[in-house]
Image 1 (cartoon, rainbow over the protein chains, first blue to last red):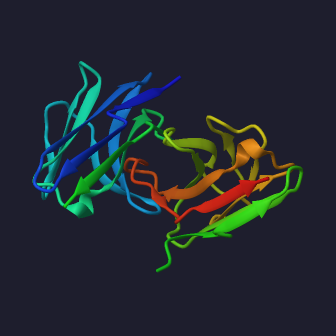
Image 2 (image 1 turned 120 degrees about the vertical axis):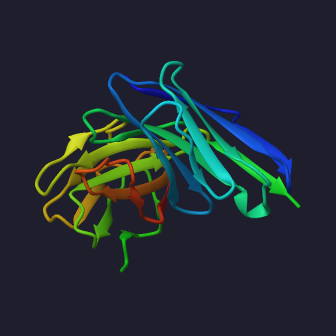
Length: 111
Length: 114
């Protein structure tokens, strides 16, 4: 059975700090790893990673995948209060029909 | 363009009652999913469908049934609600061919079973 574990469970930072979120996984036939941001309602897509060592970047957010050690990190630099959210990691099997999500990391950015 | 729409958004049930959650998408997506979200447990897949007339079990299917009679609609049914089914339910859809990973989510339906 596929397994996705995120850490930490939650963290509190101040504006301007840098945040690093971790996601480790076990999946039979790996296809991709995805990051989502969930504010008040529906999760929204951030990144999809398929290859090791290639950083994906969007503004102050970046993510990288290590397929050998089976983990990914999501970095947020110069955090803002709008970054407060639950960040979800998910893995997709090669069959490509569905995602398995981790428990999420709740991030609170204080002014 | 409405995207993915779930109804109802809130519902309170008594133990043993039945109900149906409706998910509608207007993006012509083949794949549709029902997830539940409980605190600290992320999203867990209940059932999914890879096309009209097809359904499959996910990670936590017990106590739920689904139907996909039309491509744009995916219904989730609770035949006899239990307090353990108190949760927030999310419907999602995606288009295969590329990765199915970029799911488009509805805004969620909060269900409380007393």
